[in-house]
Length: 541
Image 1 (cartoon, one colour):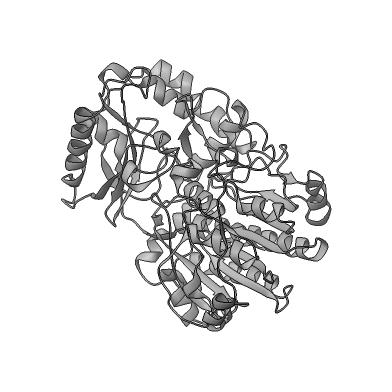
Image 2: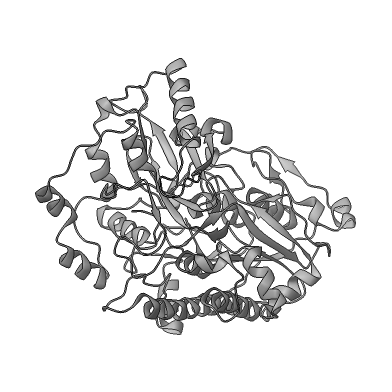
């Protein structure tokens, strides 16, 4: 079977709700050309639709119960909560499998790729890389090459202003900087194509996600080419065009997103709700203790401006220390709506017994959440509550939260680690000292555009899941597909003649395990740096 050369271009959080009006306005010519030549449709994301979980599912072809990543914050085998990075991904990655088969890979800016994995080619870690003074490339000398050709490498853009300025002015600067970092990542991808032998290219542009969080309210109407969201999408399309210029007709192109996005109007504080309902008990914090643990605000601001994490214990650790375990039956942890029951045998001071009591509490919390209404608007807040054991499968389900909370369309769920917010619901916008507003949240409907090679020229082929892409890429690369993957090759997206001549070859393989030594996880300073970044992006509060 002949192997395809494949380029995967990730537009983080891209949604057809934005793409469609921009296509109609004629401002995404490169994406439009690919759509006219190939197949396209919605790409279903994970539950929760959050970057670490979704990208880990993409790169492994497995559900979170097999790869072990459920959120930005995860529980390790010692039942300690910590900020996760790529070392937490238990499933073998797509680029590890391609490298084993002697395919040459170039991987740029994919979340959950730090520490950089030794691959047959080049890898530049994504947003989980803590600081520029840590090795974030493979091979290590690639960092010096980036400095020589581009004056250095930048993963993202600051979300806090260095000087006092208006939200409007800083947002305009933020949009401009997002376009610049998109251009940089596109130029880096082109450099690797020009200077390295590449059979598989993967690059992720995170700017759509960032701008939609800040300007999500624009998605409540029709996005325009002239607004901030439209400008960032056009920058992604320009970068796509530059990459396409360097690919010949033998390449297959996939443009995809890890999840979608939409506007939201109000915030639902899950930890505050749990405490108010009596499920969670926390120790009070005196003003002196709060000042000691939170640090002087001036020092914390100076630390951010210098690009250094402020010293002290992490917010996660401070929150866990405040839990009165003997009086707590459930608590929230992570960036999205995740509830853990304080179960006997799971946590050292667990009080919830298994079996009947566990089931009763799950049902009671679910019932109370579904009946919760916003005290201000009277609207229902929660759309659904899922038990993780019914959503996930695999050896790492015991590390998953017990309940997954999905809010209704107008709400974004947060877990308030600082516990300085006593309102259960409040308006979206600028809060927690942010220099930007936060009015956009994730949805499960991402995008997939597949063009070139064996892909059929069809339109609007829904039914694809993000876990399907790894087995599809393996199949198109001429490799067998492990039966332990949860995704399946997207045969209905291919020309019938192609998959008749090239049937899928399946093989048994271990469900977990990475290739090579990823190195240690974060030290205290690294974890503080990443936690600060996630707080500034609005993922942690």
